[in-house]
Every structure is written in structure tokens, then in C-alpha cells.
Length: 233
Ligand SMILES: NC(=O)c1ccc[n+]([C@@H]2O[C@H](COP(=O)([O-])OP(=O)(O)OC[C@H]3O[C@@H](n4cnc5c(N)ncnc54)[C@H](OP(=O)(O)O)[C@@H]3O)[C@@H](O)[C@H]2O)c1
Image 1 (tube, rainbow, N blue to C red):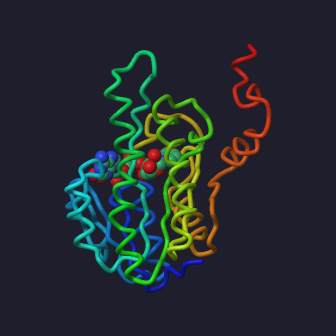
Image 2: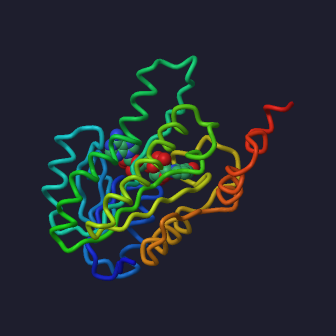
């Protein structure tokens, strides 16, 4: 369990979408200082947030960002991109780019911040996955989020003895730029942020953000045709 009141928190992708909602909700819960990253830090508009320039695929950018935030005890790996490359038809570089952002990016951030969090007495890591970690409808996006889910599960085992708890967030469509082209029910970023931070404060291993995510997770135990009815048409 990690108290967010007075905590110093680092949120990647904190200028818009779910990350912006996380920043707002963190301050509503009494966080001490919230670092909010963007590739262009001028886009961070929260009046209290500390803007930090960050490109998650660039090790030098990650190192520079971590050097600016040595008082952090909670890292939120929220930044992500949805290229959704087709495994057969898209350039392989598109698949690699998605893994660089969604898998290696959080890995670089976690490696940079674990020593910081340890020095500050322990804390928490929240990684933002997706319902598509468990449902392969998103091509390379699904694969990158499945790989991140596995990374999170391994990190939880490695970090527990080092005083750092780990929560993974899985959620279906959320009303942000990333899902702008999708015509389907979407959760509000504010609701998702609140659920995710409840998970941090209660020490949940996983947060399931909506009904579709709960249904898909339950479906993992069944026959694959249950998750992929198109196989039997
Ligand atoms: N929206 C959904 O339906 C949905 C569902 C499940 C999971 N998610 C996950 O939720 C997280 C947040 O997404 P969102 O919906 O809030 O999308 P969004 O509004 O499009 O925001 C994406 C964020 O990620 C940052 N980002 C992307 N690539 C980056 C890079 N290479 N380096 C640094 N920052 C980068 C962006 O920063 P800039 O401002 O610098 O561009 C932006 O802040 C992502 O991990 C996404 O996969 C979203």
C-alpha cells in the first residue's frame, strides 16, 4: 500500500489523455509534487505540475528526466502509442517502433527510477497496459502491451524485496486522442485515473478498468474460440 498524500510522483505522458487525468487526480489526493512529461513540455498545462521533457525511446532523454526528479517515490509509466501495425502488411519498423515506445520505453524509465525510489525509502510503480494485452485484435499494439504486462509481472517479483510495489492497469477504450478514431463506448480518463490510483493506494497487483476488461480476463481461462468468436464463423 502506498500513500499518495505528500508523495512525489513522476507521470510519463502527463500533458494529455489518461496521463493528464492522473496528474489532476494525484493533486486532488494531496500529492506533494507531480512531474508531468511531454515531448514538448510547454504542453503541460496543470498549474502545479513540474513539466519535464521526455522522449521515452531515447536513453539520454530518460537519464536527463530522471536526473531532474531525484525526490520521486512513485513512477507511472503511462506514455504509449498505438500504431497497431499488421504483422503481415506493415513495415517491420512500425512493429519495432511500437515496442520501443510501449515496452522498452517503460523499461528504460523503470531502470532509471528504481535506484531513485529505493534511495527515497521505497515506493510504487504503476504500468499502464490495456485490455489488448489479453486480446490480440490490435496487431503490434496488442503484442507490445502483452509484453509490457509480462515485464510488469516479472518486475513485481524483483521489486517486492526492494520495497517497491507494482500495479498494472488494464482498460478498454478511453476517451483520449489515442482512441479518437474509435466509434465505441469509452471510459472517461478521470474515472480510469481514479481507479488506477485506488489500486496504487490499496496495493492492488492489477486494476481492471471496465467491464470489457473483466470479461476478457475471465475469458482467458476458457477456449480461445470464446475470446475470438470470428474463428468459428
Ligand atoms: N485511450 C485508450 O483507449 C487506451 C486504452 C487502454 C490503454 N491505453 C494506454 O493509456 C496510455 C495513455 O494513452 P492515452 O489514451 O492517454 O493516449 P494519448 O492521449 O494519445 O496520450 C499518449 C501519451 O503518451 C505520450 N507518448 C507517446 N509516445 C511517446 C514517446 N515516444 N515518448 C514520450 N511520450 C510519448 C504522449 O506524449 P506527447 O504529449 O509528448 O505526445 C501522450 O502524453 C497509453 O499507454 C495507452 O496505450 C489507452
